[in-house]
Image (cartoon, rainbow, N blue to C red):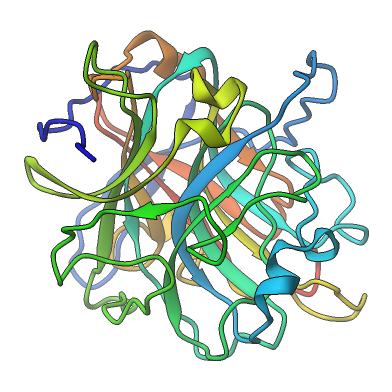
Amino acid sequence: MEHPVDQPPKISKCQAAVKTLKSAFLDGYRFYDYRILPLSVMDFSNYIRVMSFAIVSAGILESPTKITKRDIIGPALMRGATLPVKNNADNSTTVAGMTNRSAQLFGIYANISAWGHEHIKPDAYSATIMQVSNESRRPTFPSLYNDNKLHFFAQWTTDRDWRTGCYNMDCPGFVPFRNTRADMPIPGMVVDAVSSYGGADSSMVLQIVKDGRPGVGNGDWWLYRVSGPVRFPLGHWPAALFTSLSRHATVAAWYGAVGFPPRARDEPLPAMGSGRGPGEGYARAAYLADIRLMDDMANPVDASMAYVMPLANAEGCYKVAMEDTNGPPYTFFYGGPVSHAC
């Protein structure tokens, strides 16, 4: 199967109504201005629902306890809920990031910083996600791995209750690229290179884009690892898996997520991102950098970026802040420490 022609990702323009906060870096770091966006609970319950629902997502995930393939694709652990959830006592996922809603979306791009945590309890998870969908939902993350390491993942579903689809290649769906280089990530693999506070900065540039090339593309959703101007195909989700998502997406999202299903009331939520707040900036806070939207030819969709909005359903614990720049590309920081309060 052919894959879309490699080309350098381009940037989009966006305008946002924000207020500026001056944040100082210690130990000789320069001053930065951060645009701290208002942290509000996004509720799309009043939007007209489409009859079908679909989502594809990729990112990095820590989740210690191993469960079986039957558990992964079964409905009990694959529940979805309107994003974000207002009552965390009833639903275990807490998120912080950015979301975009548009009539038609064909791709998404981001540079994802990689952070690991030494103490993630069984059944808990801490993840960084980029996704396209046709409704405002978030993935649920059952425990997938019998370790405390960071893993690269890919995920899909076609219904709002997560009765279809799966993670990685645990069911038919995601098709790995046959000639992927040995140094390219495979869904499910361990991410060994992680960032350290005030030290090494490790990240992964990913792109999800619909192949709509006239006369050549067949509408599949492709996942790429990007290095400079070159895109390396990792695999694709066939268009035949989906109904409305076979044409285009309407929602894009970039965010951190933590959870503990099932969660006792006195159980703390794990650290999100680096475990520090977004105001600490580069080398200290987790980020999703160069966030962009794409059309079906991997070109920028400038107008839609004006509708990027902050997403946080527990702003007292996990926050998001956009870097103050004069224009694209745009970067935001997110995260927070282990929390008993949310």
